[in-house]
Image (tube, rainbow, N blue to C red; front, side, top):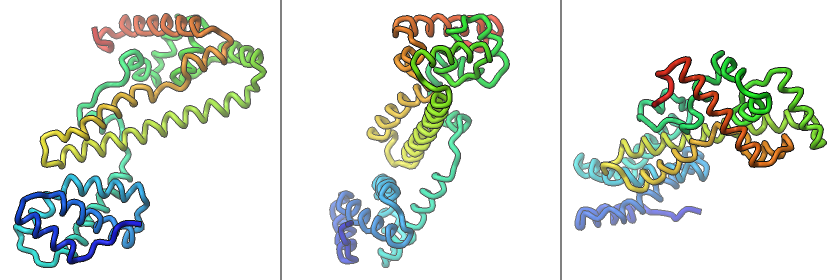
Length: 271
């Protein structure tokens, strides 16, 4: 249950700011008032209320400065309208689809450098052409790792490996689709959080808020692995190989792919 903030508490917080220019008391009192108002009026859940408070926390100085400069006298009415705009922004950003193109607007880091070529070409015929130069087991490993399509011959070999593990193909495909779905969902959530950080940084009075910078760095690091469906350990268990064998096949197959892409298009891979 949120703490109840009265109109009198709000007025005291404003007076304190006017006398000391210290924002924390207003930030706390008005923040709790806004959260309670949004919870009752707009039916926000706990996650949305937390996001609302964090957004207001960074905008508190602008909020009170505007109120004082405009010489408004009805603080609860002012905060009620302010809350509405904050909530609308939350609803608006949650409906957006955060794509790779949107990330480019912020000049974010590229995906993991040892997989970026594979990801870039995964929907292109060239990746299938490159895979032809790799052993069947290498193709299976790369395909499981990065959700690439497998040909019939490679599928037969994969099914034989599954049979050794007493694993039904139907069960494998169900698990596989679930893992791919989880990867996509994880990436979408990380992109949402990343762009929330960007928006807060952009709207902040500070040049680059330290806590947002640290959070953004962690999110970018997590994004590097969101295209990976199976770990080396998981693939070695599926294929009845040692981790060393699986890792060696993965690295050598990846090098062949990268070299092939370089030959076909020397500008597609950084020197």
